[in-house]
Image 1 (tube, rainbow, N blue to C red):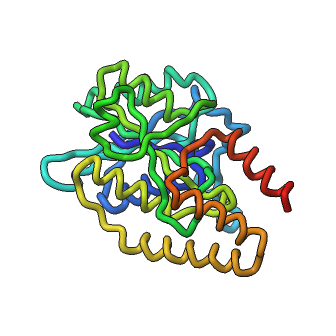
Image 2 (cartoon, helix red, strand yellow):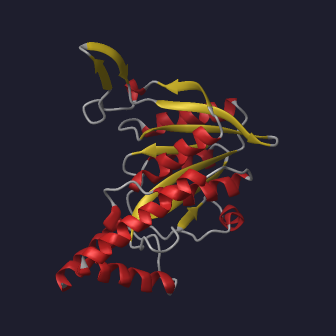
Length: 263
């Protein structure tokens, strides 16, 4: 089971963008939804209505949906996507895991993305965490160093382990100065790592082109703004000396504020 949520855990829409790409590339077939009534505050995440020429065509609720796919070989994958719930997280996770158990899933892989002090000019770092050292070692990825608030992926991740599933989280680091823009580069990095963990292939040609355009967009920003260029250069130096890490949001804010004070 591969899971991604929109909201706080989805910097640059990288996690949900990656999941949506897998859904399309692997032709996932929707087979169930989770009623949002118990879990979502509709004043914070409102239903969407579509009106054409005064006629109400549809009303869409912020629900969690499940899709089944067989991307290759004997491996079947259940994809799960939806908004981060506002209420009853433990009950919500239990219901998601009930589906995983009913379908015979052996493992749960959560996708997330956080703002971090990384430059857009370098490959997107993907960090991992797991409840046991052997799962971390098997992923063969940099490990995260984080101490702070968590979102629903962290809770699902922990409950999956308690329920007996192999559980692994992948987190992409998205440049903090690119917070307001979708990041196809981070989506691509998550997709490639998720496919490697699962052991199946996924086509990424179109997304790879979008990632190149994303880099060019921020290259132009650096050309037009000396302060941004200097900041990115500092991030490049840190990245190239392998000192980049998935720090806490507090550390990131302090770093950005220090940079701005020094200007």
